[in-house]
Image 1 (cartoon, one colour):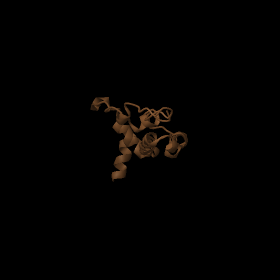
Image 2: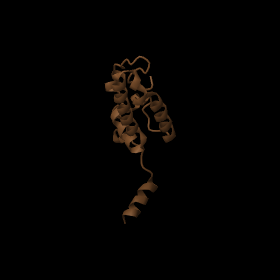
Image 3: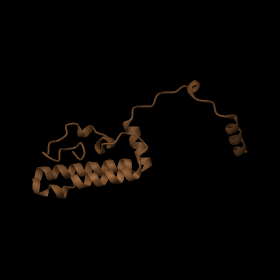
Image 4: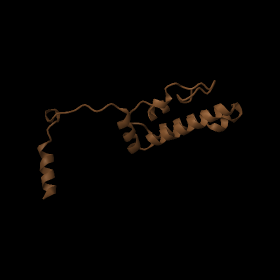
Length: 121
């Protein structure tokens, strides 16, 4: 499968595609550190196999599935392409961060606090 949306050999739907995140649709691990070149390469690979024009001669049903899949892929690419959108998408995908108490937080260095006071003056 070019993406886990439908099989490009037989046209069978992937049963859980509706609940997949942008990372899942693209076959990426949900993480922030993704090179833009890797996203561009992935987009090219998926477009080569999934482009709706490739499916015109294989029946209306497969062509419609390819259109829907390409739309889902485009949305997923937009959700991970820029760092800001990727961070937003990660916040939606990852479980809630653990709660920290004040005792868990490392103390700020005195030099940092002094610098902040100097800036405020």
